[in-house]
Length: 72
Image: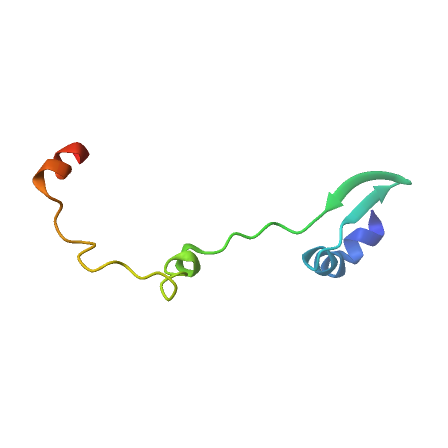
């Protein structure tokens, strides 16, 4: 445990790079240090396919009345 305290920065670097660090106290495993799974910010995900999708002409035109009534 004492060694983990003094080496915390290095151990976090290892975990961040995919290593699993097990911390022991008196020869017994007591904690596991692993990287947090990061989620992509919404700003990165939004529009990610904008260059790969082509909308048909008239896609966002107003729906015909008989079809629009099903979405109210």
